[in-house]
Image 1 (cartoon, one colour):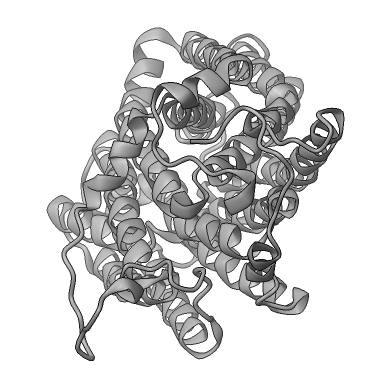
Image 2: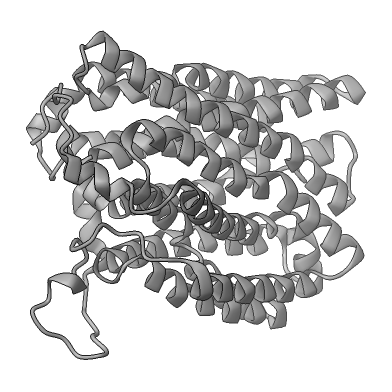
Length: 458
């Protein structure tokens, strides 16, 4: 079990594990996993601005079609658990290659959908295929980057991945308005095919030698199929530390969905905007904020870790990284609460401009929180970082899938202002959980030991 302060003693053999790949190889690997993450984000977010057109084409209501977005979040939860569990046995490279065919087939299925049932089924398959992109990406980063480089690498991963938040909605709206939402999903299938080819040709296995389940088998055939319980990762949530990270990321990310999912019904209705491409363009400020926030947060969290280790005379306390989440923890509730009030009470160009500022600020704030809490998860559960991340993401996705289904009905019943204020209050609760974990993290880890990392194996 890791104590509060683990001494700065890293064996040379452990250092050599991180020197297996040269710096340029690490950048290439990071580029690979980041663009797979970008594709996954693109798949998820491009769907939102096309909801009104899909509803019209399939003769459905917008609220019913929005269920496809909720079911994609559910698929992301299930898929992340399955892919991460098998990555611990077979390795990340193999799992990346297994997931891509599901994405490609599912995308073609969505494009061919002619009914609600067909749309929901293929949307599930599509999202299931790319569900492991984020958790596997964090796992790969943990494999190749040392402790004090990890936050910066995760920041780069987040920034590239979250370009999807800024570009994908605009492209999705433009494709829906001027091309076809069906052709958009055919394009996603083609992109997935190219990613699969690149991974097959140039992506190495990054897991530490001898750590994979398949490496520990005394004998095996050329093809070995193992049954792995995909729900085993969820057992990590019995740790108060892992659960705290999950709750914080859920409450913070929820503000993103509260602002972005109902854009057509909040900013669109309030300011008389009906063009899907223009509505999609309103995702740009939030995505740009996420991009900037991710870059800042990565370096900031690494800097905080280094400075606090210096203060402790070289000893490492995992919770020090969470101190970097304070700024974002203030920005997030202020931005979402202000957006609700502005949309309700301020009309015209001034209200629209202030909303754009709130969307940008929310993007910055969310990533200033998500980066350090995600890196903390990788730090404390290094050997099972993909599984721990997947457990948190799956739980978060299950909660969010239910929450997103309630956003539009909540706006219709209570109004934009109260819906956003409730999201802001929940974000404040998330920041309180961060503060509690910083103060009592050592006792929380001691209460339930799920195999936490120490400096010697991190």
